[in-house]
Image 1 (tube, rainbow, N blue to C red):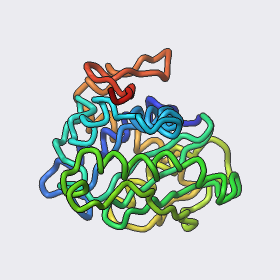
Image 2 (cartoon, one colour):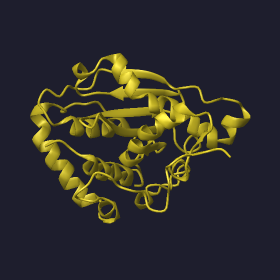
Image 3 (cartoon, one colour):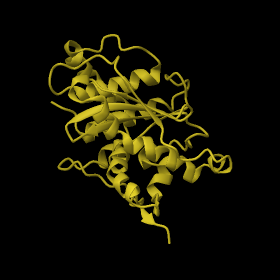
Length: 242
């Protein structure tokens, strides 16, 4: 069974919770795990930004930028000031998950795909364009240093990493994506990540979620009959400058 948005939201929340532990299990505490709901909205709104020079970020973007969304997983970590790396899953065409590492220091996107044969380099780069262009623009909008030093909102560079183990059986791209993001955060290689290990990896992920995500807020955000979830008290919808 393929992982859907609800599964990805919950697992990313689990990774976020682990990052609050002392000591952190990750190679650095300057990591932010983005909510897949935010990522989906980001990609959805990108054409609006491309179409208008007057486009501005809605409140939900700022709340995410300063670590106050999702509300059930607030970290209060501000991008650039407290965060060097953004990690998030991205669903392509509603049928395939990839992992994205956004390096805020080197201004680069690294994309990890468990089925490299599924899309050309050019096609995948085009799919990731929303993040390459909107991440620096968001930082420029809210980071005073970026404004004062005129660092600008030039698009991040893009690199497709082809070392991720490949998924040859159908339906496991979501699991590969989650484990890839976890390995990046931990600073370890992909030893043991393969199709043959999928059943045991799935079981462990499920067990870990139920053991480590006790706050039901995460689950209450999710409507079991729909993959569309709204952020409470925050609007992502952009507007135009008056």
